[in-house]
Structures are given as structure tokens and as C-alpha cells.
Amino acid sequence: MTRLLLISLTIFLAELGDKTQIATVLFASDRENSAWGVFAASAFALVLGSALSVALGTLARNWLDTIPLKLIAGVIFIVIGLWAIFENYRGA
Image 1 (cartoon, rainbow, N blue to C red):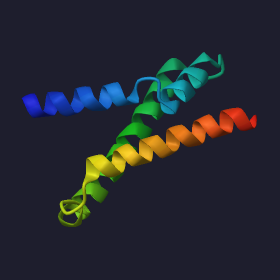
Image 2: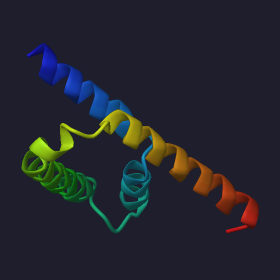
Image 3: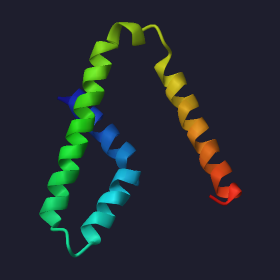
């Protein structure tokens, strides 16, 4: 139970301020969309994305054990951050 709570908390914190939440806020602010409809569509999309991630992670489990995943994830986040900074100064 503690492990599931930790996973839930980690994913919740990682999603805060994510583009997904911003898009959900924008859809919900449109008067033509019902709040419950936006909630249902957003929840379905997140569940589908999570299911795909879990399926891919499960399939790649043996291969991924040999790779330093935290290092790779850190490098990817740094690259994305540098790309965002570059795009900001480029005027995009």
C-alpha cells in the first residue's frame, strides 16, 4: 500500500502544471464543453496513456534493467529544458 501511495504521489506531482493540465483547464473554460465531459475525456486520456506506459514498461522490463534509467530520464529532461530555453530566445 505504501508503494502504491508513493507511485501515486510521484505521478501526481509530476503532472502538476503539465501541458495536459493546462489543456484540460482551457477545455473546461470553454462554455460549450461540460465540466463532466472534460473531466471524463481527460481521465480517459490519462488512463489510456498510463495503460500504454505500463504495457511498454512491462514488455521492456528485462532490457531496461541493464540501462541507467534515472540518468537517461535526467538527460532527457535537461535536453527538453535546453530546447525550451532555445525556443524562447529564438522567438518561437
